[in-house]
Length: 322
Image (cartoon, rainbow, N blue to C red):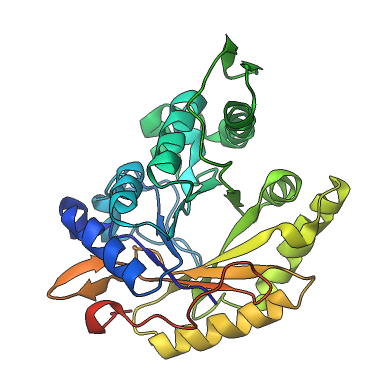
């Protein structure tokens, strides 16, 4: 089993970057396997699409103040030496591929090869309006971004001629220490097909109470496995990453028991390597000392995984508020 945490990034802590380095260093000291960040641009007051896995609702107040995910990972890299540093998720269509590739490569180099690149297509039309990107094109943009990233990270001469972007034959020598694993989110058929064809992991999600059940994950997982097989890939090599969104009042004991139960059932369903269970910053924050430090994330990986770690890490400085 592996334990990770989400960096303090949402809400009032977004204006206290010192909490990020303090949190990151303490999480690694306690045996955490990974540190993660999310990607939100704004909190619309009259959203076109509501927020919530169990039904549309208002955006969480914390979304009104968000620390930049790239800077957060860079800060964490400066005070850690072992934990993986990942995005879960980065809304890739917000960005253009070459600057994105350079930023991610620099983070990977700053962390000595610990970056996990997690991408999604995004879901908020308000955010797409704000960045001037057509909402209907987000899937196509992600596909082309992945194409460019792969070329930048592997080709000696980078050249790309796509519908969105053109890169003339060029030398781009700034490369990651090793090719970062690419994990993709989504439940839509197009997203599941994309994951099976080209991703190293699936960024799933489940609410607690309610949707944190293996029965909700098995059908999309089967679709991913089928797409992987059709693409000539090993389905069991695709990691499952499950973000857990507990509601206020759900105890840490209930979160642990339910996520462990889902993990065991999913692991036995088709030889999945493992699951990573995370709680995002929109619902609660972990506390360190006297101040809010950040949301907690639980990472669980199967015994077959190469990485190993503690069954449970103690909460930072004594207590976690779920």
